[in-house]
Length: 226
Image (cartoon, rainbow, N blue to C red; front, side, top):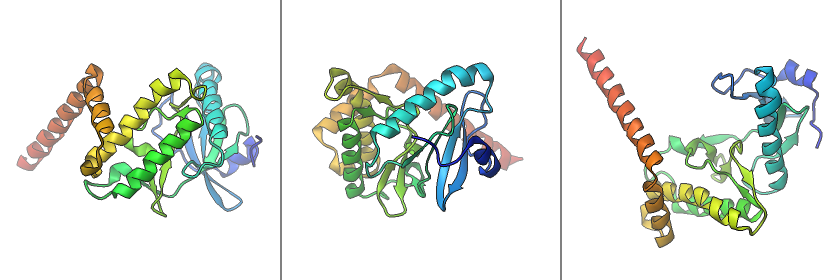
């Protein structure tokens, strides 16, 4: 699928990078194409060796995922690539689910989100980063959207690998239910959550977050005492 604009047009019209500026991360820049707000994920300005290897691999994989999910409600439209270093997708207006507090998300939304996750699995795709709540958006119409498939992987439909890998996505949805609508947790959700908590590296990551939170509180208290 060809892109609706050339590299030259992209460089002339795209806005500033919206992503943390790291040498190993792609730039994510806003651009408007025929009145449609879009985002460009682009490795062009990254170190040459990284761009030609990991960068192009990531872009090609994510582009193939968007092609596999084309036409699925709740997935941004894929608009193509102007070259091997970038891809262009529709920009979804909304708020990521991490900006909501407990009980601010309805159970009906979570049901729709789980149905959407099941739909991508039916097409052989696993997102594999739904524990990052910024990847789940509440659209302006109140519908769930999944964004950023950089960690996503395609598997043969119905394969044992797909059945194994999709557990990661389903446990991500279960964690959202636990926060926003715990009364809707099923036995399967509880099993997924219990398995997740057994993983040592996840316990270590949570402990690290707790330490950072305690350090921030200590710094604020110290600042107030000055």
